[in-house]
Image (cartoon, rainbow over all chains, first blue to last red; front, side, top):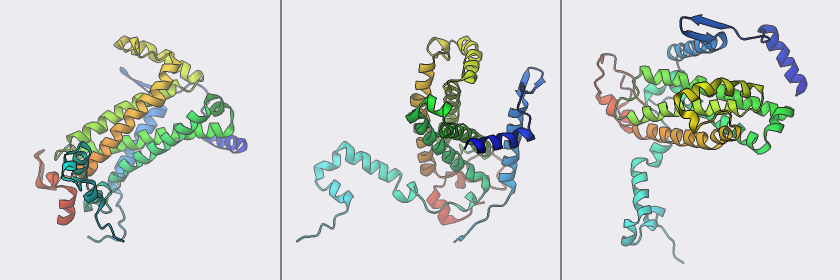
Length: 62
Length: 239
């Protein structure tokens, strides 16, 4: 488990540098971390995909 | 040898005087409002065949994992979830299931907001969902305060001034670990579970909100909005 955790940590760490203070965006009185902004953006993408992607229906009796 | 052919319901009110019992009245009211086929339906209206309708049940699934992992963490305690590999794993599952819970709940909320899901006598369904969201934020916040690490110390000392400025600090002390832990593992989960349970029962009672009819550009409730799930299934796709 420790080895797996270490490997996963290195893999994620090689993609995104998580060492150091977080990055923030300042816009007037609005201040938000880049991480939170990315999550909000992902939610918007998933929301749009949920509406646009057709839902496959199996064994419909309608 | 005789055979009892009575159904349980018949047996329960076999004596006329028993029909006035509070329990019998409550059972009749519950069965009338939510008969088994409506409580656990095996079919849904045609318009539910969309990915946007999946996010409610995804939120419920994430909540189940949150509660399950929370129970495991409560059994073994902080020294276990901080020091052992399995403890760290369960702790991470607890955190990430909360992330999934909020992610899917927000998408569910957006979907229901743009559908005006309070239409057709569904105000209580909408309100219980909104209040569940707000209470869940409190449950997550007290969870961050209950980690017993530097992160929780940082969050509590940053939050105390904000909480105190509202006056709530008089009874809600974010630097009081014991109080925050009790709120996180007893009070708030209980409220969230009751609200979510009520929310799901209301969805069963009022049915899943139908989409707007293509020609309906007003907020006025249509026949489809008011229809029960059973009526919609009989009529078919109302869109």
